[in-house]
Image (tube, rainbow, N blue to C red; front, side, top):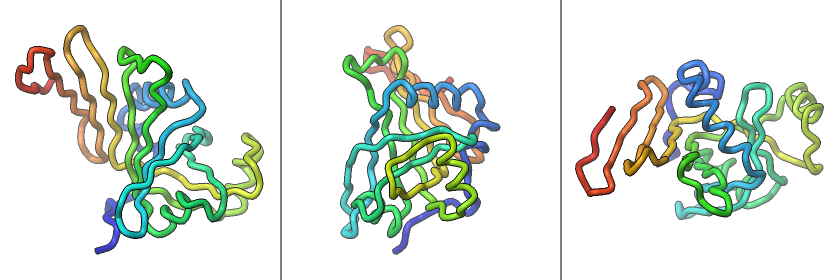
Length: 172
């Protein structure tokens, strides 16, 4: 069975239009540190976890990597990914822990690549993938509650809470 993708691609702009404040929070969290953790799928279906830098340019979440890197080959074969923002040295839950899952679309349009290089000088040669989010999650603390915010295309932002006392999860 091949990779599952949404019937209509969702761009970062679509996410931002649907949830501007949440998109801003997620973007700022990624921009706090340079290196993050990317998960891709190997040929046998097992996960591969590697480091990666992300860029937010042209209202798009970009994933750049070296040609023939294992992660690039993984994404060319199966575009599904998840990227976890670097939690930092102290894993400060007050700011939340964020993850974006989705599909990665390789960009080969010379005009788009030229525009990207104008704003960022990546090591050469490089491959560029546009992230199309299928799920964005932020987990944080509010007092003693763990708060999980989940956004999926075509659905409202969900906010789930769980108390430290092991009480049932409740939805705001």
